[in-house]
Image (tube, rainbow, N blue to C red; front, side):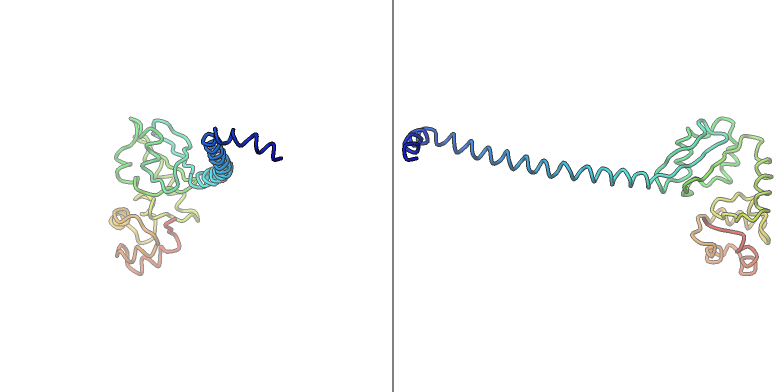
Length: 198
């Protein structure tokens, strides 16, 4: 053993600096590999988490009628009607723009599975009939999205009040009709079981 030490002593004296530098480099390499291996497993878990959050943060909206590209679109949760309209390429040339200006709330927040129908010119009367039939059923009328003709079907609500309801949107609760002084207590009692904000 002493012979080995005596043989290595001159080599170590001659090459001590490169040997020390090689050992330091080897330690940095080992540290880097350990850090790299421990970090490489973490992003995979984060990636899956981000991917699942993205799936939850999307909604599907069906936009049909007088739009350039009708169909079902995936949008971010919290998107509004205007974003759905843009995704569908905007209103087509034959869209009833007067109906859109009066009845379509572009700032309305969309929900998953919602359908938007943009009528063509001359088609508005047909849509009103369909909406009237629906309003006579047990379905609640959404005061945030209902057209003037739908709101007119509610007891005690006429054209003036329906315009006030549309002009004061959005509503977080049906009680906002009282808070914003859109309807009186007696009218509210007649319609409270027939309306919703969802």
